[in-house]
Amino acid sequence: MPLSDAPAIDPAQAATASAATASPAGADHEVAVQVRGLVKRYDGRAVVDGLDLVARRGAVTAVLGPNGAGKTTTIECCEGLRSPDGGTVRVLGHDPVADARALRPRVGVMLQDGGLPTGVRALELLRHVAAMYAAPRPVDELAERLGLHGFARTTVRRLSGGQRQRVALAAAVIGRPDVVFLDEPSAGMDPQSRRAVWDLVRELRADGVAIVLTTHLMDEAADLADHVHVVDHGRVIASGSVRELTDGAGAGPSSIRVEAAAGLDLTGLRAALPGDWVVGESEAGVYTLTGAVDPAAVAAVTGWLAERGVLARSVTTGSRTLEDVFLDLTGRNLR
Amino acid sequence: MSAPTLRAEPAAAPVLRRIAAQASFETRAILRNGEQLLVTIVLPVLVLFALVRTSFIDLDTHGFSRVDFVTPGVLALAVMSTAFTSQAIATAFDRRNGVLRLMATTPLGRSGLLAGKVLGVLAVEVVQVVVICGVAVALGWRPELGALPAVVGAGLLGTAAFTALALLLAGTLRAEGVLAVANLVLVLLTVGGGVLLPAQQLAGPLSHVAVLLPSGALGEAMRGALLYGAVPPFSVVVLLAWTAALGAGAARLFRWH
Figure (spheres, rainbow over the protein chains, first blue to last red):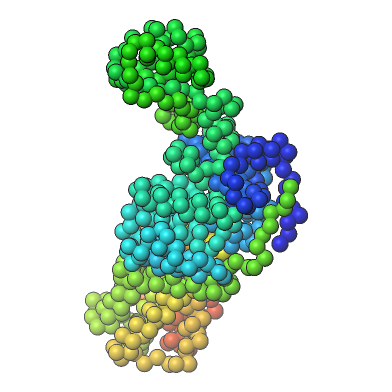
């Protein structure tokens, strides 16, 4: 396999990427997918506009973004389904379009719309896809893992959305790929199915597979991803591990949540905390205090409660969630 | 940086196995679909029955028995229904549902997918020919077995031209549009395209146009092979020209998304 055309990585980019890769698994986190300056236009409009992305083996890389941000187009360029208008894409050191033949056996794909033929039975389809590979995973073992046996003989047309998604995921991994692209893998799934999918993704990661997934589910990204790229308007606008993104620049927790009696007078609390804190009763009996959390701030809060003779049901320090970060970055307007 | 290591063993199944698997998959999909069976098997058999056993249509059979005269045209219609209508509709919906894109990302690839589809069409045609010939023989058809190579040749030429047309439509129009157009075109060509009846028996200018259509050329080729022992060269030229033109169009215009 010719590997000499594998691109050198920009040192700065490599540093961010490796620092952010949290998974301690044995795989040595070689770069599996490298996208640099990707541009893709539809009818002259740039849907992807200078996007950079790195995904490593033995790691889950999540691509988050609002609808129309360019996630799917980016993934499709990596899958060789679309040709870039600018920039470079390398998967396992290969050009996904020019070297498609070399990559197809090593890359597993789950399309956003499933891409499953509708007239065939679920397991028949999986067996058919398996026939394309020399040494596929055993169909029955994978079907067991993803709970496909319950509807093995049902035609794809009659499956629920979540069942179809599980069949599509099985088809993506049946060939023992080195790289897997999952476009919104758990859309339409019930919580049990989602757990099964997440477990499988974690197992693939432990086996050294590079997993790239797009998702709208913040908890999915937060639970699964070693590295998150937030995409908007065709570019990556933030990148890092979930912790790096939610902590800001290593600033630590940024909020204190107090559950206590409703309707407390907050004047004394505002006076006790530094001036830049934002204090409010977000719902009855739940007080959200936002600012740079430190031991003194926690002491000020508990001191204020003691002074007023109020016993709190809970006092919790916490970070912003990934969803908060995402909304801050991409805006709260519908689009 | 360390170069990405790829596993040494080949991960794809051999190319012929992939294509055979796809061909078998496509064939089963068509033979299991009720609407596809209706247009590919039931329709030609009904037409054969109607033309041989009823006299709604006054046929000038050039001195042949009705079944001898009609069966070649019905075989041509069968080729059209599978290579064109059925394939256009199946491919259009596969395209809309992302099936083409998904299979293109597996080791099958785009060329393997195309090869599998063409072989699937040929397999369905074999089933059609067996059924239609069986019915025709039961109705008194006694073909010359020596005509077989010419019939196969005419069938392959027709399949090539109509599959190219099917892919051109399926790769450029919306699935619902293809559904309508593919059925409508089949009806129009059956009635006025010189498939079932020789073009010169059609009314007015149609008789001149139909010989230039792929339907008329395929019908003439089948009749030539089975009635006169030779495929007319003009029909061969017409079918090859349509295949080249439609194939080039499909190759240029086919959209996978």
